[in-house]
Amino acid sequence: MSTTPETAPKRGSRLPRLARRAQLLEAAQEVFVANGYHAAAMDDIADRAGVSKPVLYQHFPGKLELYLALLDTSCDAIVASVRDALKSTDDNKQRVTATMHAFYDYVANAQGAFRLVFESDLTNEPAVRERVDRVTHACAEAVSEVISADAGLNREQSMVLAVSLVGMAQVSARYWLAADNPSLPQEHAADMVASLAWRGIGGFPRTDA
Picture (spheres, rainbow, N blue to C red):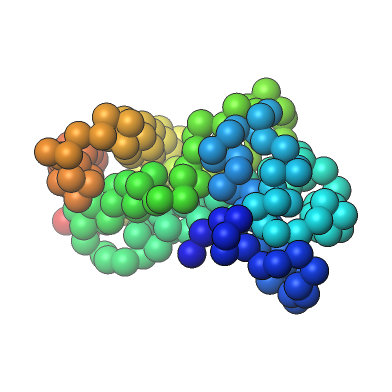
């Protein structure tokens, strides 16, 4: 459940450190997603979390550190989802579908965490750029390992294909969300793009087929 000014704990209530950190990150995500990095204020985040600014600064020394911590969480989530999708089956067609759905699920999440990764207004900051690039690279690495193992391609070849698939998933999912077309449900959109991706990657069959 999202933290709102009405539902946030009262000031002064004590929480274990990890629980407090999670609460602060949740509040920060809502503020950063709504306002962007530059327009977000630590005062707003503290108010959203129902804590004083000194409490917020006990956990995060500044706005950039808070943003990077949140970005790490968001990046780890999509990379883990892609890896889980790849491990969910040995059937490569189903793997493509599961991976595409992982991206669409991530983008469609009501909390809007994907905006921190793919639509950040702070990409000129090296630490942010490094994390954003890491998402694409880590997801592509996971896909590349499967392609290389199954199709017998070398790392350079499999990475080119993997980056292409990841780019297709990310860009199409963001377009689908922005288009907000009620006649094209999420499941249908993800299935369509998965079918397109499979028609391409299916041209590189398993070496044991």
